[in-house]
Amino acid sequence: MTSSAPPLRSSRARGIANRLLVLEAIVNLLPAALAVRFLSFARVVEGRRRVRRRRGGAEPRRLARMVEIARAKVPWRAKCFESALCLRAMLRRRGIPSTLHYGIGAANDGALNAHVWLSVGGEVLIGGENAAQFACVATFSNEAAD
Image (cartoon, rainbow, N blue to C red; front, side, top):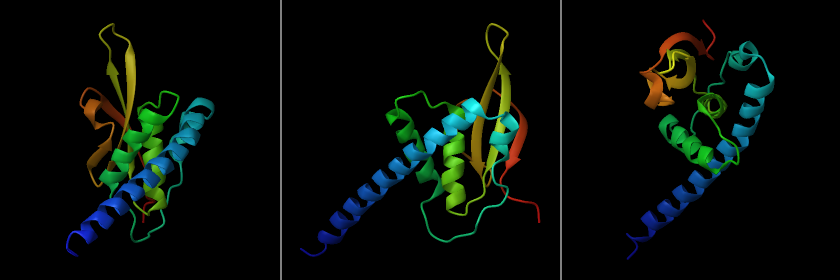
């Protein structure tokens, strides 16, 4: 009887933690959207160069899933750039360095399109579903060189 109680509490705690992470992502999507809209590209991708090393926090893939859930809940269209900036802020808060990738590709009508994706340790966490269609022309790491 007691063996079934801990998983229930654990599941409930995970659910609450996930809701809090989605809320954090929603809160971070707004400044990301405003930055993309009103600041220069250089200023937006510059970000903070150094991350603070802290222990604990959520796994990067889990944070990326929460950002994807949050994207669907905001009343504006959060695109790849805003989503990557949101995840980058959440990772930075947890002391996890990341790399923002900027790519360009040609559309069917010949126009150029841009795409942004974010990786941690070489693993693409957000924006990866379309990344193969774009040539990466720049990367921006928030970890300062030693």
